[in-house]
Amino acid sequence: MSVAADLQIALPEVLLAVSAMALLIFGVYQGKAAAGRVMVLSAVTLVAVIAIILVREPAGIAFGGLYVDDGFGDYMKILLLVGALLVLIMSHRYLELEQANRFEYSVLLLFATLGMMVMVSANDLISLYIGLELQSLALYVVAAIRRDNARSSEAGLKYFVLGALASGLLLYGMSMIYGFSGTTSFESLAEILAAPDTEPSLGLIVGLVFICAGLAFKVSAVPFHMWTPDVYEGAPTSVTAFFAVAPKIAAIALFTRVLMGPFHDLVDAWQQIIVFISIASMVLGAFAAIAQNNIKRLMAYSSIGHIGYALVGLAAGTPAGVSGVGAYMAIYLVMNVGTFACILSMRQNGRMVEGVNDLKGISRTNPMIALALLIFMFSLAGIPPMAGFWAKFWVFKAAISAELYGLAVIGVLASVVSAFYYLRIVKLMYFDEATEGLDKGVGRETGLIIVATAAATILLFAMPGAILEGADAAATSLTHYAG
Image 1 (cartoon, rainbow, N blue to C red):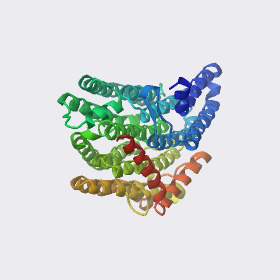
Image 2: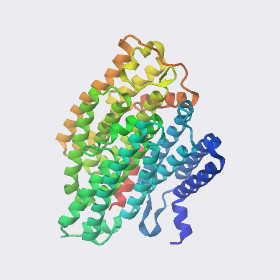
Image 3: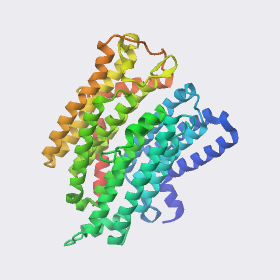
Image 4: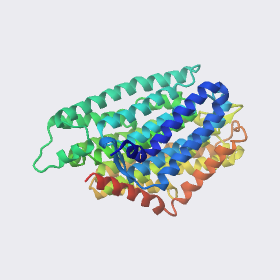
């Protein structure tokens, strides 16, 4: 295949890469005055990339088998691109109020998003690692982008050190797999492992365990979650919103592609690993968040728990499980973007509100924010009629179909426990006396995002097929490709 044909298949990534580099050069020459224009142009770029993915058909494999463009990849890319776009829009007013509006912020988000797209379309261990590191290097910097803030610098340093450890684990696992199989190609690995009367070597299994450990860090699954609460709390709130959405979707997509693609025939080996980290994430996310008084740390443990629920679908190892993961991440995107839009709009006397107790009585002083948060908290807890109920229902159903009854039961019990801290926020807003009201005015863009995500969270219960249909098509594409 010619280079032009390869570039045509990877057009969304090419457009994003060229635009990010052009905006970087533009920002360098224009200086601080370029921040607003770079942010607008970045948003336009993301919209253009989404449009390209929506209007064209998946085109197959490119770059000598390193890159695959299929329905599963397109579905997950649209989710992460929408997440990145919404966070970028929400960031505008926040960065201006915090006097931290630099053009580098938007460019770094574009480069991180580019890395995520490469991850999602990886068809080889080499391209997997390139995408993962491109995303990680941009996120290390953006976590510490407020250099004058000690907490932001600490968050970036912790993320960098622990991320380097995770990359080391991943590389070691990749080298083991290459050493024992002689290939890094997903297609070749799938053929080797699918061959009749072929018993995978112990070295290959060990390599797979190390790859699972490295990817578990990227999705912040227990026991590789230790960076998440500190980075969520220390990073600027708009960056925390980005961490909570796009990288999680990309990493779950990569996790799913790796295990359901080349290693699908080793399901008995990796299923126990996924079951363990899923249970550990759900349980820790449920219990550790109860004691949190900082809302960003609470949302960190909430995201750890929700990754555990998403992994329930992956543990099933079936097309229904993959469909459940896809649908779960779509609803997770809506719930978390809405929640962080509310958090970004909460200020008292010009400063950001991060304490859970600062939400006392805001139903009387800021009824619209309180109502939106109520909707998102109910959905995150999985209480009908919110969309979060369907998300958990689909992954638990897939687990039961795969006869993982214990996993489904533990998931339901963890969901009941986690409802405590979500409902505690509702109780503080509606039943406690107000200490001090929030500043009026949330900003037009953030307000529109809050309204849209709250409406989607409610309306999705009435038409869940809209989400499940797209997730089913994505799952069929992946499992068909996997053989």
